[in-house]
Image 1 (cartoon, rainbow, N blue to C red):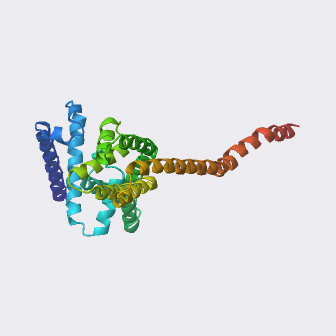
Image 2: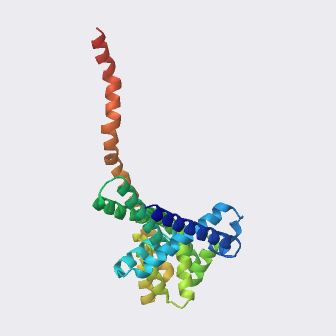
Length: 291
């Protein structure tokens, strides 16, 4: 038993030494600058280098699992979730699966140490492995809301640019260059990149429709594809789209406003009404007891 403890201690020490050597190698090489999100923001702090090392280890772990993953449907689902979230924090598919492995192992070990039984521990590990997906869903919802807010203004700019005589590609290039960064501008930049790499306008718009989950963006992409196929004027099509999207967004805002009384019913019944009853009838009951 003591011999086994010494073997485990040696393994842990070797792993720690390897991590330290890797840390020193990254610290003294250009990999630190390349792996950081912003090379200009690197100031040599240990916390930044620690992030590089940890993310590199997790990415390597996820890469090994990703290469051995045989379920094509599961692969496509992970890629679609990551693309819908806009690759937050520079997250790659390998790092995503690495975080899933870490979360699953953490949940499994925690429940096993709490004497929950092997089946419950495995089930808890599976639920913990879904936590990165939950984070991606939250990030995707925020990104979808930002795209929905920016869409009417971008369509107006497209109408102005195409009405001034620019082609659709040139109008998208001007908007991407002059606008402030937001998720919709990032999508248009990706569309422009695909068109410059040889894809047709229809194929680039189809890819944008697949990446985003907002129905307005899907409607815009489908309408532009149809206008390109039929050869109709893009400027007039964009004017109709901008008006239609503003109307649909106004209708959705009215629907959310109509749902407010129903959503307020729960806090009224369980929080506000009991407090109000205590304030109104409490003195009466207390006065009766005193007499």
